[in-house]
Amino acid sequence: MAQYSSSLISRFSALFKRTESDLTTLVPEQIAQQITLPFTELVIPPASICWKSNLYFQHLYDLPRGALSGPVQEDKAEAHSFLAHIVTKTIDTDCIIDLRDIYGLSESVCGLQPLQSLESFAASEQCRHIRIISYRDFEKTITQAIPHFLSDQPINLRQASWLGENLFWASEQHSCELACAVVYAKRRGLDLPKRSYISRYSLNSDALKVLSRNYHMLIMPEQAWNDRQFMAILVDAGIPYARLTLTKPPVQNEVLLLSKRKKSSDNLGKGLKLAGGYDAAEALLRLAQR
Image (cartoon, rainbow, N blue to C red; front, side, top):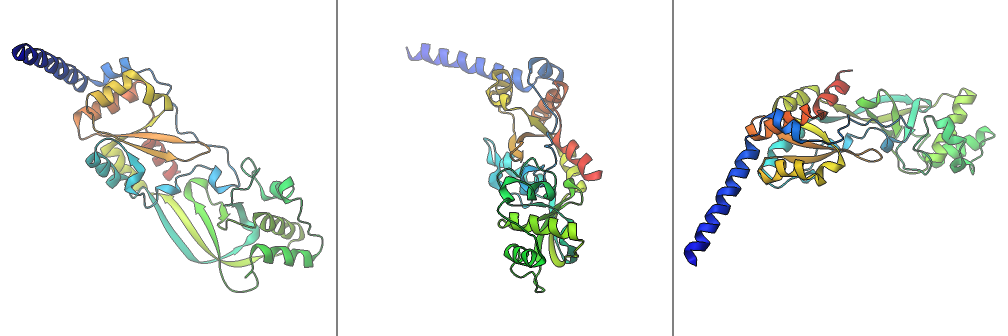
């Protein structure tokens, strides 16, 4: 009985090893023939005056190690070392900004997401309770939004290179008051200069080039993680990988990171590209260079 069990175990072991070997030695063309997934390019939402509703990469600045998922800690740590600097942040403390040049807001106000101008927001139902008829009304409203408006204390703004030169007010409250005051100032031709600290987020072209030389960074459809054929190649063969949420809602893109320095993961990356996959690192590099 023991001899029979040992023989049976040996046969199963040999079968498993042969299957594993078959998967890890698949060439890109063979992988492409087996993968049928609805790949898409990097999804870019319509422009919005809502900071969080636009293309959202700022969470990649100072990326925590826990942001990556995957079965092997070493693979996640290696991928993280290449991702840590693809988004940079600087704070410009030497700016005088006219508040009329503010494009958008950081507070997630209901109804703000699809709007493309502060004028549209000021005319919306959310701002209906604010009425600015006189200059006194204006002063009252602007000081509700910015209590230190008449002092030299700076306000905080945000800007992201992938969103152009648009400036967003960083405060998470009194967005209605600020929008209505700014719109009134535009209509009345009132100058609103204010000392500002601007947090500027940028895509780092050099870091993205290094990432692209070392990794496939493939945009994966949600269906991939329930696709038996794809998961058999990825998981059953023990291919090293890491996963990352690249952009956050309202449009979420997840990427699969596959090292180009390891044959099995490089073959899978090439195979997924042949099957129609899009490389996010290449898309980010185009955004950084435009």
